[in-house]
Image 1 (cartoon, helix red, strand yellow):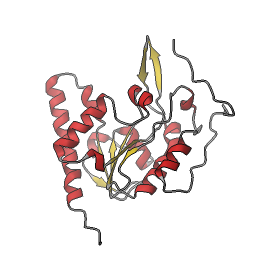
Image 2 (cartoon, one colour):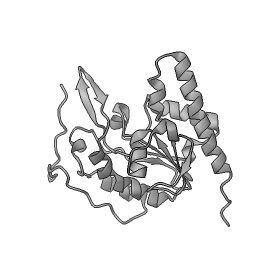
Image 3 (spheres, rainbow, N blue to C red):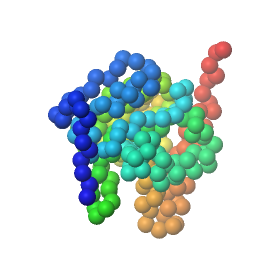
Image 4 (spheres, rainbow, N blue to C red):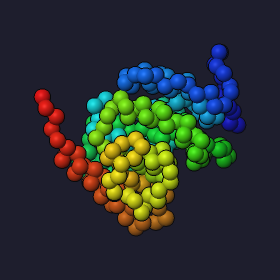
Length: 225
């Protein structure tokens, strides 16, 4: 049986109690502060906050939807099946994941019980808005050249509205979170392909989008010494 996480001593249970985002560029301080966020009810059923991870001088930030079951348990983003697809595609495009920063638009796992499994549920607009200050803070700390939205929830967080992913994928556009933003699918959508041929096609298109990101990174002006 699934149970809600017990509140720690001194914690408040009121939904919508926004935790102030520290005015710091230190990712460690931001991660610690985000662990106490109560801006929406998702923290009640999540194991922990899953903050972003990666190089502190990353030129590119990949934003996904939310942690999955494995990420919720590990406390790290993109360590499950979708993360393995992302790693494989980054490698194919010649992008070093260790030099990137990966995070999610929503920092808590939203799920529903199905038997003994915890099944992903899509975050709603309120939950995305509640988490945007933390995403902004991550980006403020990193000042990346490129922001890559992986899927519809990341698009909503970056642009403040819904944009069709397939219609806009691969385009460079300014967003609320970055002057050079591009859109592609979430790697989990590749896992949901209905047959091997569809999966191969979806993966190839995903790699093509990442190739465009790699090309833009290679064109980045060299910073003066």
